[in-house]
View (cartoon, rainbow, N blue to C red):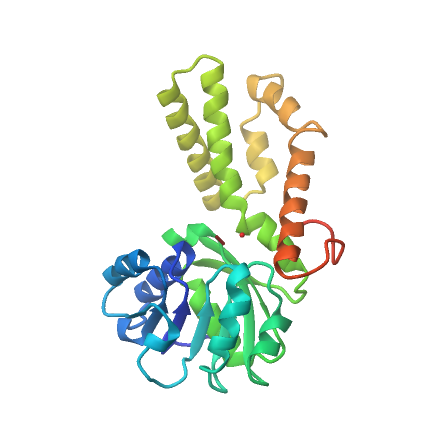
Length: 288
């Protein structure tokens, strides 16, 4: 099922992810007049004004009186959510979709804050949404009707690929893997460049080579349906230089262990942001 991209839509939070979503919606055909963004930072509001004749406000009270939004998208930091929810719970209607992209905050928190029967969906996009290459995972509360789930799909498909899950607990792991994943890749570029420089390459050349190598390999992985293990094998000659490097990187105490520990740490933090005890749930797991 699909839903047309029409409003009114209210976006709460105009940071990097909020701005990326807004740009994607407008590019996908949402009329600028049907989008309102509430962002308290005046510099961010000034930047958002370049999107066109959208509604811009520094607080909910500044919004023009209008019908309840078709979708209320909450793109604020998890730490600020307790202060945000009571304000917006009074500004939705029975058909409003409440869509949160805040890490760690569980569906039940929104269900309790909004009127009974409000349709709620959680999503975890990532920053490549800014160029339409995001990866988003969604999970819906049973209160979300089919048309509201469809609207959530349309809103997130505008900025990249999406996937549904049924088990909300997995969102901690999604946050750790794809939510924070772009930062890990950017750090890989840093680390490759630093290693090249330490071994004798000119700094500027090492940085350019690292960036081109990681982005090129990423594009190859995106356009080639072969498993990543096969792509790796295709550039690894037995007994060659790449094979020697992979012996180091693939050692049990190297990348495999470090990545598991990194994702587990991110998942723990996701649970903490949602108010869960450190030992709750399955071990392991934008702006997080």
